[in-house]
Length: 156
Image (cartoon, one colour):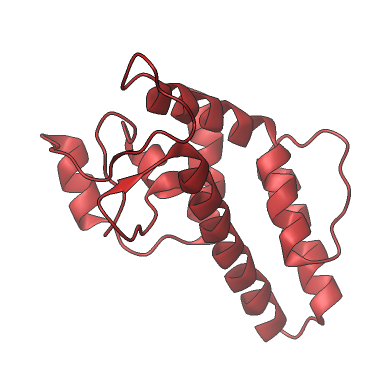
């Protein structure tokens, strides 16, 4: 099932970045962040594969994808990755991802007085209005959607 807790996923950008598939009815912050990282890796691999389909070799595809990340996100001390996992690390080191992650962390911690990063919360909840409609109409997200959502979430 898709993670749709309305206390955590508060807008469409949150859903694009953090609307991950979860096995079970509850998830803690640490497992949630790990699943978000896996989802980003899946999108990065898809982007690299698409770039390679245009005739680039693997290293050129990695560099093109990294350049794309750097054009959308503010990453200090760029490391110019050599593989897909390093691109994910660059995304997660970006100011935009850090700001989004901080907001998500505090939303997870606000559920109980004694919340910790390992305290599980419910995966689903009730949405009303426009966000509910947007989430229902959402299709599979692309790598570009992720970059745009991170940029938009940072600029709120």
